[in-house]
Amino acid sequence: MSSRDVILGRVRRALADVPPDETPYERALPRTYLREHGERSVAQTVELLAENLADYRAVVHRCATVPELSALIAGLLAGRGARSVLVPPGLDEAWLAGTGADVTRVADRAESTAAELDRVDSVVTGCAVAIAETGTLVLDGSPDQGRRRITLIPDHHICVVRVPDQVVGSVPQAVERLAPRRPLTWISGPSATSDIELDRVEGVHGPRTLEVVLLGGV
Image 1 (cartoon, helix red, strand yellow):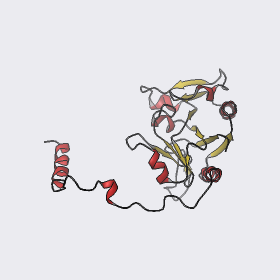
Image 2 (cartoon, helix red, strand yellow):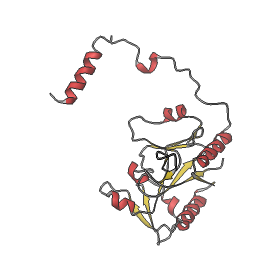
Image 3 (cartoon, helix red, strand yellow):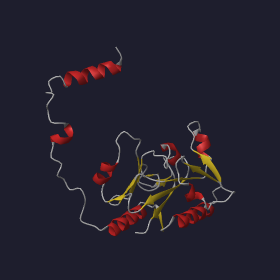
Image 4 (cartoon, one colour):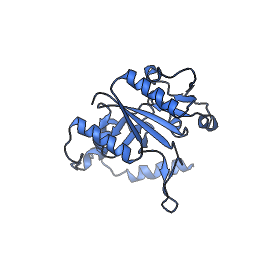
């Protein structure tokens, strides 16, 4: 008997006396807790997101149109001297239309090694949702975001948030939008730790530089 069999056996025994008509877990408890702190307009929610992103030391940019976004991304890559950029398979081609031939586009491939990804200068992704109250971006591995590791290894991450459609006020509102079975990556600012004597060190478990572009007219 494997450990898996032992664990599943314990679960079955624990559930043996549960009647089939018992109230499902998600409805067993009243969930009337506060879902958002205060009332905000859409514009105020977007402003709060920008403020909290910056508070986490992300660099926030804004643009209204895709052509502006394309020019902005090209400028950000050029500003860092990036010569290569990781591209998720479903990223909108127009977002990178402004980059020149001097920037090599690297496809997100399953067979890429960590060392290969580490040699890439930047990565550009979309996101699933952005949370204003916490300044958090959530990626769910959709085609415009790619696999989790492409946003953990390169040192520079540009993440595009469509506003206001992808912006919510609070964590409960974000969870409602997310599929729990997807590989969720929650990002609040550049990778950082203060484990050693409370001295902040950035770039330990992910990119040292996070640039967030708020794309939209709000």
